[in-house]
Length: 102
Image (cartoon, rainbow, N blue to C red; front, side, top):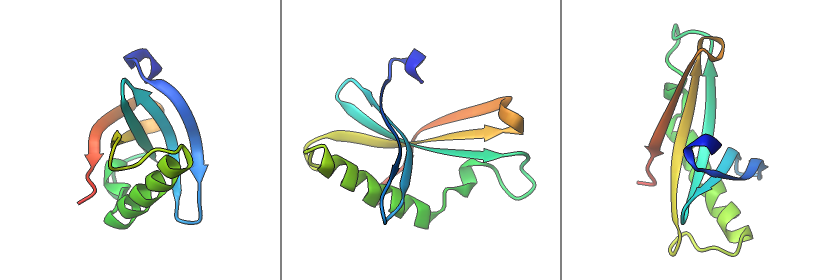
């Protein structure tokens, strides 16, 4: 992701609400990344593992991170991406704007 022009900010940010795997910045946008791995798709793809409940936890955890950085979720651009890893890392899918707050 750093080769794509993203600047690493944080990893494994853990709160009582949840955890964010990776946090990057691209320009003025903060990118919160959920990483999911699946050996195979027998029980669904890695991206499908990001449930509605998980999305809600990610949003709340991101708001906590932003607050700790003295940023307001209302004044800063941010998004949620998913990195879906399949088949022992041979297939990596970066899904940008994968999660909406709505």
